Length: 166
Image 1: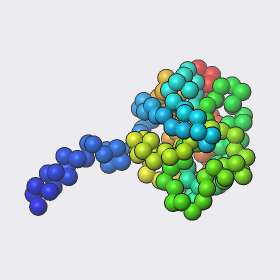
Image 2 (image 1 turned 120 degrees about the horizontal axis):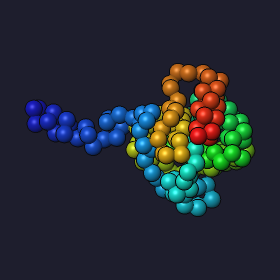
Image 3 (image 1 turned 180 degrees about the horizontal axis):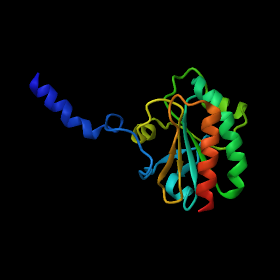
Image 4 (image 1 turned 135 degrees about the vertical axis):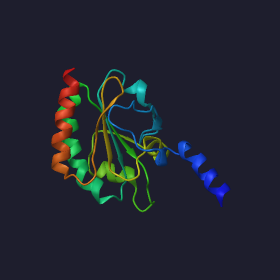
């Protein structure tokens, strides 16, 4: 038993989920994923010198369903100012087609598929996970759990506005 505990404790630093989540001030990890049209998107390259929003979402999540329209409003407000917005599909259960749902809702931000490993690397345990990343790839906002969507929208709006003005 003692050997098993030692083994498990040795694995803790290797596990991004157990090691903790990305915090404000941390550097956002880079990733490469395919968008819904099969095009490869390299995060650092695609968002160079830009503020970005990263949303981890799942088609079956009721919390994503209520938050995503608010995020669309924010994106439409700031996209002409250079804001990049990535919706990374993760933790799918296979019951709904995420591409069909995304298109049905007419979301205009970039949708990326098969983001489970990226979500794990970022320490995301459930959806929606929302981050705002500044031009230097530092996390400046992370959606807190249990906060109403309207407050998330207001806080994000303020953080994006501040980041874009720098």
